[in-house]
Image (cartoon, rainbow, N blue to C red; front, side, top):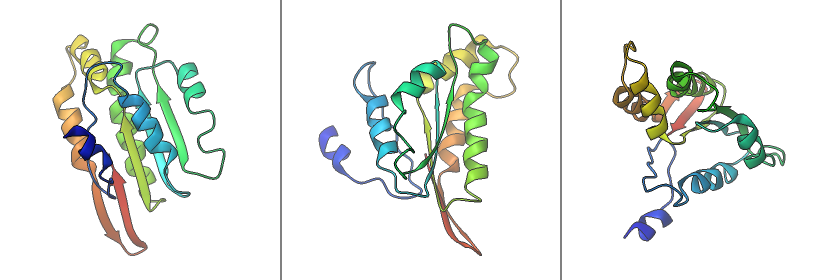
Length: 154
């Protein structure tokens, strides 16, 4: 059943969740989705991995005239919880801003469980991890503007 669902195409403005146990290929699938984006698509990728590790993963992305890629990485071993918690919010804000200049934007929030753990470590936040996840999913959609249709896929 899951294999059949994986073969279905993702549409512009859709919300897609890749859910599964650790080391089952969710991040790899997201990287393949990013690599398949057409020229002119803006991609915002946020992860709880050190930026050096992410640079090696995406070293060829964007270099061959494909999507414009913005990678945000935080290191759980070095960065404080409050910084790690706000990364999805920063990524969502950037994706929303990019939607004004790109007809298609793909937002990838890799490892939301790690972001939720970081938020749980910070007791004084005005918004919790479930609300951040819900806000990210709520952002997806297609918008008709005077310049044409624009989409944000999460």
